[in-house]
Length: 79
Image (cartoon, rainbow, N blue to C red; front, side, top):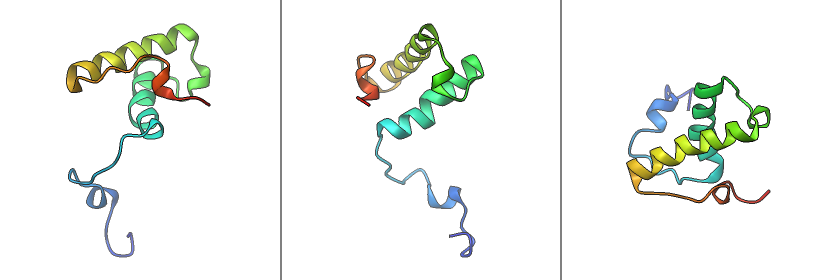
């Protein structure tokens, strides 16, 4: 792609259909919220209380913006 002169903006335009998976939600939503709130990049560095706070922000946003509410922690899936 780079050799063809294409960058990621060209490849992933707004019309690209990218499924919402637990992995990309964690990377693109959860981790951005936690970094903004607590300055931590790794979820393993958060306390239980901080995890609950991040979840509350993410849930409030997805509920109001998209009408989607997922019970915590089921949306993260099992490990």
